[in-house]
Image (cartoon, rainbow, N blue to C red):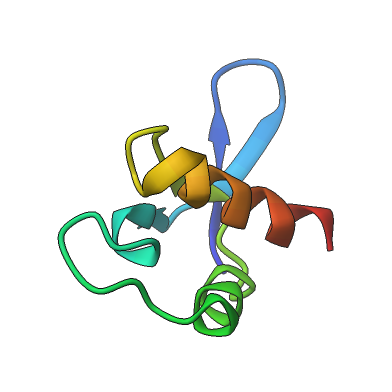
Length: 69
C-alpha cells in the first residue's frame, strides 16, 4: 500500500482512503462485521467515518475494533 505524508508532523497515511459509510448500512443493508473487518485489514490507514454512519456510532466502533487488533 502506497503511503503519503500528512501535514508537517511526520505522520503518514495510505494514499488510498476508505469511505466507511457502506460498512454499517446508512443507505444499504449492513455488511457482515467479518466482511467489514477483512476490508479494513487490507492496509488502508486513512478512513472517512462519521458518527452518523450507522446507529449508535456502529461505524466508528467497527473501525476502532479493527485498529485495536
